[in-house]
Length: 377
Image 1: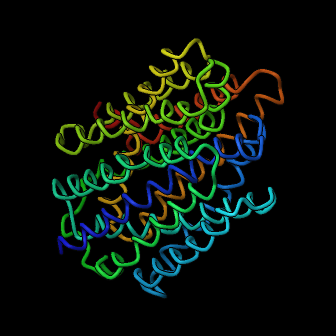
Image 2: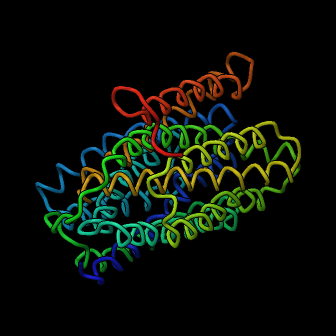
Image 3: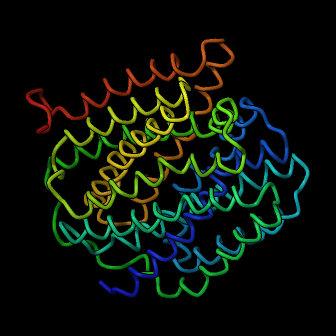
């Protein structure tokens, strides 16, 4: 596999992730500061911006087959440059909703193309290291998007000027990205990995469901705890930085492969972290919750991507399914949190009911056909 192609894909992932930190996470702080959104409106914004994400991700494979990966990358990247320019002029609120959703849809189409460029033609330890490099590339830069938002002090020209500049840097990297018809991995994945993939693809939308339940609420959480508006995005980045550390460990140590215990440990950390964040007991408990949440999120995400690419042979469609599953979680989170607010119970009871259902489905996915013991824990 061409190393320059891998390096180009990793560089694009790093740049896209900074912009993802702005559009997917920092947008709620901007909406609160510039357009005066409250918690309920931020949750609705979270739903709207991820509504087109799922179909965009699923369309990436068919469109790449028709147009070619590089051409599609360039086309979508150009559209995102245009959207970023329009957002920088602080458009009226209705246009802000549309442009934010369009920008996120473009990201949903770009990520499967980048993931396929990273994983295609690799298997075993080589695939684990490539997926690890990819995870470190995007996860280590995601928090920079929040830093941009924190430093901008509500100036959309500054925020989206940087976003546009980063998209422009992607263009010279596109010709080096591997094509859609590169050779598939030669080794077949172990049979048990199919069940682990099925379980991970149930847990991963839950991870993003929880994430998109708490992310739109974090501006309000920090405000209620007296954290200044310029520090709140930086405190929020705690979970992102923790995820980088866990990604690094998983990329270097392959002992977790083939075992369901990693998925259960990640789930436990996710749930404990979510509870600590939403109960808002103080700044330190919320930070501790974000650390746990980041660790759990890393475990579930890494496993889902690794097994998906190993079983799917590194095709764009495998990345599209991975991103679509993420999008479903992002959609469900704000809906459930809003439901809890409207019911007067808060988001935790509603989330708990859904989590219980997800855990039951996960257990069934891990059991082999015809009963017997689940995949080794």
